[in-house]
Amino acid sequence: MSVLLLVILHMLASLEQFMLSSRRGAELCVQRLSMAVTGDETAATGDMPSYQLRTPTTNLPQGVVMAASPGALHSPQQLAEEATRKRELRLMKNREAAKECRRRKKEYIKCLESRVAVLEVQNQKLLEELELLRDICSSKAD
Image (cartoon, rainbow, N blue to C red):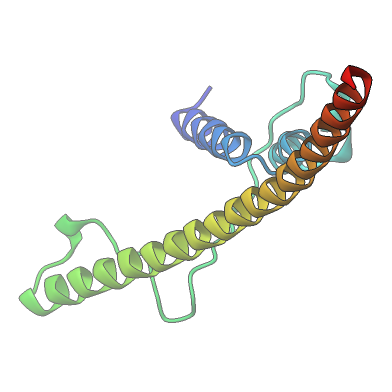
C-alpha cells in the first residue's frame, strides 16, 4: 500500500472513533465511512471493500488556500502571509470545534433534563404508593 493510502485509512479510522464516541448513530457513521472510502453502496454488506482513492474535497472557504512548504517561500512577506493564513485556518477550525462542542453540550443537557423529568414522575408515583401502603397497614392495625 502506498503511504498516502495508509494516511487516509488512518484518518478515516480516527474519524470513525470520534463519531462512535460522540454517540450519534454509530452504525450509520460506520456505513457512511465505508461508502466514502469505497465510493459505492455495497460497502455496508460486510464484504472486504476495494479501496479507491478519490479526489479530496475540502470545506475551506474561498480565499483560504493551503500554502506550499516553507522551503518554497522566499520573501519575508510570503512568510508573513503564510503565518497569517495558518492562523486564520487554525482560528476557523477552532470556531467549528467550539460550535460542535456547544451543540453536544446542549444535547447532553437536554438528555439530562428529560431524565430528571422521568425520575421526578417516578419518584412521585413511588411516594404515592408508599402513602397508600402506609394507609393500608395502619387500617389493618386498627
